[in-house]
Length: 200
Image (cartoon, rainbow, N blue to C red):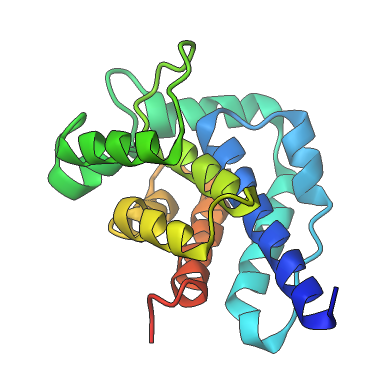
């Protein structure tokens, strides 16, 4: 493998891991294992990704300070609440103002075309931000789906609302640990837009 190909392959692993981490942090309250992973983060201090490096560093620091018990409460207040959490983590909500709306139907069609089947034990709609991050991680890791597929999926189902969601997460009154998650998510969306050629 040439040096260039090796660098590309390493970059794809980093992207997939970042999506997987976001999926884990947003899909359920963080476990001690997840916090342990955050504490091992080694930010890339390259000048071309300074904002990303800063976001990684903040996420690592948040992981070092966090405790599982309070995180359970914070997660519940943010995403579940009584009736509804402070932040709604669904694409349909951000794109139309309604849950279970047309964007979810379009997503389900695209997932079927890509060969993804809904698992019987999954209760959340597929347009939950955590599910979308996990799908992107799988697309990046799969040899069957090239970057054009990644670009189309990201552009249709994450780009229209992802940045707004992560900004709302940073500004949420009950967010403490999740402010750092929101900061990292916003910077990662920016990075992905550039990486996928969606920004000039």
